[in-house]
Amino acid sequence: MKPLSIGQLAKAAGVSVETVRFYERKGLLPKPRRSASGYRQYSEESVRRLRFVQRAKDVGFTLGEIGELLALRTEPNASCADVRARAATKIALIDEKLTALSRMKRALGQLAERCTGEGPVSGCPILDALETDEGKHDANS
Amino acid sequence: MKPLSIGQLAKAAGVSVETVRFYERKGLLPKPRRSASGYRQYSEESVRRLRFVQRAKDVGFTLGEIGELLALRTEPNASCADVRARAATKIALIDEKLTALSRMKRALGQLAERCTGEGPVSGCPILDALETDEGKHDANS
DNA sequence: ATAAACCCTAAAGCTTACTTCAGGGTCAAG
DNA sequence: CTTGACCCTGAAGTAAGCTTTAGGGTTTAT
Ligand SMILES: [Zn+2]
Ligand SMILES: [Zn+2]
Ligand SMILES: [Zn+2]
Ligand SMILES: [Zn+2]
Image (cartoon, rainbow over the protein chains, first blue to last red):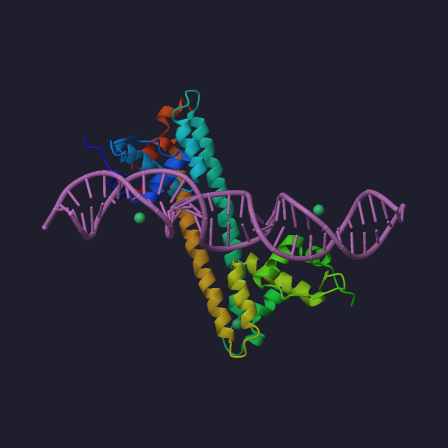
């Protein structure tokens, strides 16, 4: 039942003390009670809250979106479907990023394939391809 | 042979005028000649250069890295292998990002699967899973 | 000659998620 | 009673890649 100091909370959730204060400023963590000397005092609930933020971050939500998720939990007319919709939106965004990265990887891989790594830079097919337009959109000749 | 204005160059490469000036400040484009009234004057070579930057960006290089690639082209003792190595490094980085995003997608997808989207937010499996530790690292029970 | 469309500079602002700095109090140990 | 570990605040800095703002010249067409 003894309250946790900000350092103890930070450690328990695996973040830095500055991050905790930052999240508080951003409204992701409620303003905690203070000791007589002004030190922040946290409970186990605070640890759960902070871990929630970390997990939501891990699955791709921004801090702003995490704030919305947290707000949803206390809005009485919010529905499970709201949460689901946010998850779906996020998954769609992740898919877009995956697609873009795959395209990049393929394009760069194709350039790299043609470069033997021998000789001076002046004939490198990678640079040549970047200079001219060649190599984009798999041309047919 | 008529020189291009900054607006014409920007249009030819599909970027904004401000972007051209920004790239010049960053050293990605050489400082161009100026007309009597101080207007920048570009050549076709400038268009190629600017397109190089765009294509390198498209395959994932940062502006800093693109500057290095451009510098390689004029360093006499730079080798084709240098370019190849940069490409390989970039591909590895793209792979890391792909892996991270795939992990995110899978984790979030697993949460979303359990949410029917019905009822109030208070019993949403997505939020529940984010609050507790459950759902991480596919537990076996 | 005047208005639209373009051009110039330097500097500040934007986004996200923090970190660092500057300047000080507080608490436990020895 | 002093040292070191911790805590406090507010403000500024960081990364990348631009965009915007503020204040003004130039060119071109009518
Ligand atoms: Zn090469
Ligand atoms: Zn739900
Ligand atoms: Zn100090
Ligand atoms: Zn103006």
